[in-house]
Length: 562
Image 1: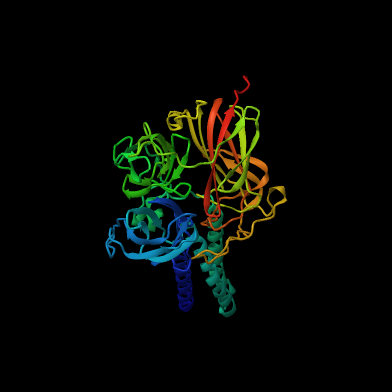
Image 2 (image 1 turned 90 degrees about the horizontal axis):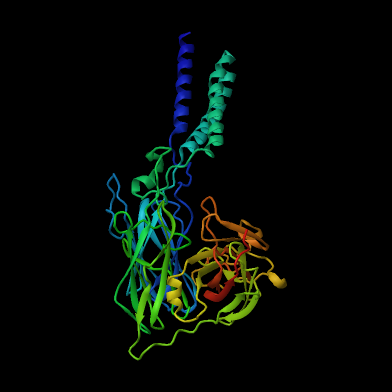
């Protein structure tokens, strides 16, 4: 009897230890933290270069961080210096301390457009900053390195299955060796309990709320990134942030001469510098500038210090320029902010410099539903449905005759809308600055194995320096029939037949980058113009690493009174 009691106690202890061990956080069972996400792509207007900086996802810490820089046609070659700096505070000591670069590198840009890469090393989870310098200016890009951790539901799932797996042979062994087979019920009961815990946790895990995500909803630090569940769950809080106030600074700009335009972002409630911007559509800020003659610049200012951004540009002509910025604050949603009065460019030393060459706008509306033009030698046809105020209008730009467009800023196409404007073509910058509507719409476009008009899929892009993966995009997941365009308001999607849909990535996957040339040639946009009148529209797509801007003048008729 004494021996039996001793065996019973040992079995009970064994079952308890196994169940406890199964519920602890053990190394092999890892999963993505909620804030892990996929690759980070950030457009940067660094000096005269328009670049896309791609930070590939870090899968282990410490570990490598692959940095890729995509250049466009006309980008000058040269050397870019890189440095990574941890910026997050931690409740525990870290070595070296945050605030100093921990690794440096360089990317040598060639004359051919494409992707150039290097590898840096990060040694901890938390917020970081990547400095990209060209010898004249330095862009400072914030990003978050997520820690690979096991979520509480996964601990119960893996722990329950581990306990059940260990107790299964134990119950068999006890049943075979023990004099009384009833002893096998004890480990068998533990095995059933482990399975019940694992299955229940797996079923309930999809319905359990995620903790607030550092870097998306919360200001990140080392502690919150390393264990976001330590904050408690659920956390009832308001993550919204006040609007951003945009102020312009820097030396006055002169026509025909390069200069810098400073953007100062302040919190509307406190007046403090805003340094909580998150990457939205592959940029911290989308800056839209419209010149006096109607030329569009879609720029991406570099971050100099918290709340201070800068662009470098050479305005071609004197006059007033309209300016607005699209950005997203952490937990505050997307905002479109305008400079109070735009900015004015003074005449050059020899008088008013001639405006830069731009394609003549095509005119649609007022009975005209189709028009053709050419941009950078590429033939383009633009069509529209009935242009009536208050009803969705579909504008479609067909670029060339092959499916060879590339994603730019995460989208196949961009459409900038301003109006209603005066019919005059003079002083367009002033008219746009004062316009009632200034919108930014996207075309999800889609990958097509056969383009419109019977065009077959485009051949793969030629191999570019630093590219070590397939660029054809022929096996991209998530592609299906249907075409989706989105207006500026979140969730405003409209389906158009005849194309294919570019699905957003999920579960840490990353969207196709600019090396994938398999979209178009038709790029549809759906937008609802709130008022009748004369509108300026600019459609932008990327082809052969060149961003094509298609200007359109659209006359929108008054809607039928209801």
